[in-house]
Length: 249
Image (cartoon, rainbow, N blue to C red; front, side, top):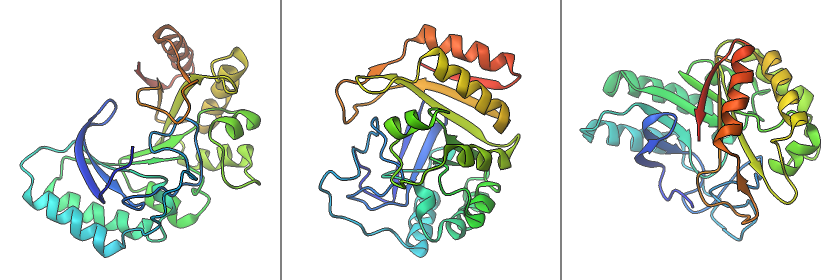
């Protein structure tokens, strides 16, 4: 499922409330530094030819127009959409514009970014993420081979240890989001996987950990939802580490 505009929604989010989406990827294509097996937008190489991304001015104009006209209360202005928002070359500047517009038109709304975190080694991206309310970083596994199987980073030199080290720069402020699933070739619900994730959480020291499972159609029909019992068991282990946890079945 693609989002066919720069501003979409608002939609009711399981974790963010009434969420107004901001899509920094093409309206009819996908650009992402990961190629996750469960992505609701489909796979990177599925034949779509649209590679045109909105400019900073276009994003600002579209967001301001919506905020000026809406009568709805927005809980979160959320950067998500058709791929990875932080790969946009004007990401930091767009975040700066969004903060100004939020303060002017919707001061109670939070600004959230859903990111796979691969670009956080870029100082401009890290600086922008430190200015927002909800810096939500994806970490589905703390085992290199599993990340390559589940998230399938497009960079063949992907280094998970360096990736987790970069996440730790947001100590106490970021949210870590982990999706648990099973399939023919992927499974991050094993004891080994959970143990590795717990060690990674302890290293990153997030403000919160969000654990959840599949909720929408995925590119592969063999993928299965993790049980509510499993999610609650993992949440209990995370709480023992001293972190706040949100479970979304």
